Length: 264
Length: 264
Image (cartoon, rainbow over all chains, first blue to last red; front, top):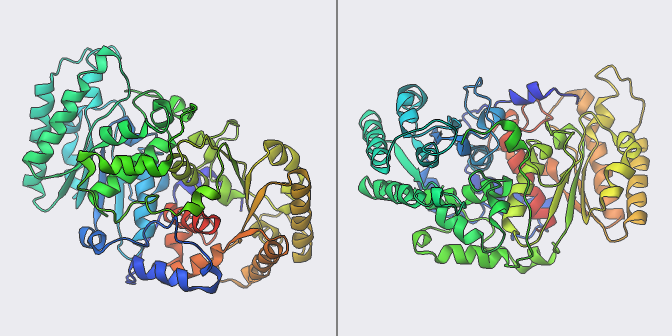
């Protein structure tokens, strides 16, 4: 069992045509003698409602798009679905683990195409190749903090306004719905726990993301609200180590909020 | 938001003295207007029973020990708790994300000290430094597949028998309970989906792990039973890409079984 990290990185999950629902899988597991003593306190999918299955059809392609929060160190040389190193260390890889194991018969394909530092115009420039060509059934987008941040940091001297963010984001959505009329788009709210004056306008960007979700009747994940609430239980840096990028606890919190909103 | 993977790797979660239970955190989150439309189908900790809190006291140190399945590419230069790269890509990092986010007020410290290729005698040789010195409150051990595998592969020509595995494992447990009388030890069943004759004896090693758990009244996690059941829903390589090492779906499955058994 000496494995190189390389061999682990290329692990890929393949699927057969067997069809057993995750509920029956978990119920089956619970009925094994060895498992019968288990409490039900921390099971995840066991009590899932029918809505979860309804919201995730078989052979769905799920794509996570965004910036460094989504990227989180993914290996960009690996383009295939469901490969752990290609999914980074953030909420997309946690989503892959949970969704693949909760829906083992669904033959899901899960991709991460977040790129560190990206803003709406950066997404637009690679949208065809990195989004439309993958034909996602569920497209999750988390974008916005750099549309503000790069105006005053990193020496990029970005000049875009919140109106540019809104218009560019709307164009991305329209372009996506035109190319993929059946896609379900999930809009994730950009967030921060930084309290400096520079970051105060992020609330406007967050409001735009909500406005666009409402305008197109898209699923909205209120990450800022979730993080604000979480900071009552543990300090900001417990969730976002630098006020922007999540810790492992922060990513787990994001995923929980994401699954609750998306209802899968 | 250009971050190097290095800066992300050193993210660390610190804690203040605030005390808010995870239940109140999640209930609080659910009461926010923005979240009120969320279904409860996929929430994880929300319906946790009181037993979960009872089983995890504040400031607990949780240590994962084992071989490559536990190691899974962790950065061994980082020795501190709760750091994502130090936790690898397997069930320990998933455990850290979930437990830290579910118990934000608990000031948990979570370590991974699995090392690829290790057997019981390898654990024994580093037990003081890598286990006892960390003073875990919960010690999870997954060991055994190499005690068999290295007898016929990797050119290591290991000569240990299943009796050596049993005696060595018992000594580890006794030594641990003597040094740390209050520790809760969790015994994880070694597992495989390989069907070759060489791997058939792994069932004997698995039985020994169960026997030792019973002998010392330790928590036992029946990984083999869980994986056997899971292969009814998706093929073996969906869970263990080479019949030994878990995919991201496999790790998520292991963690779910682990939490159900440990009841935290």
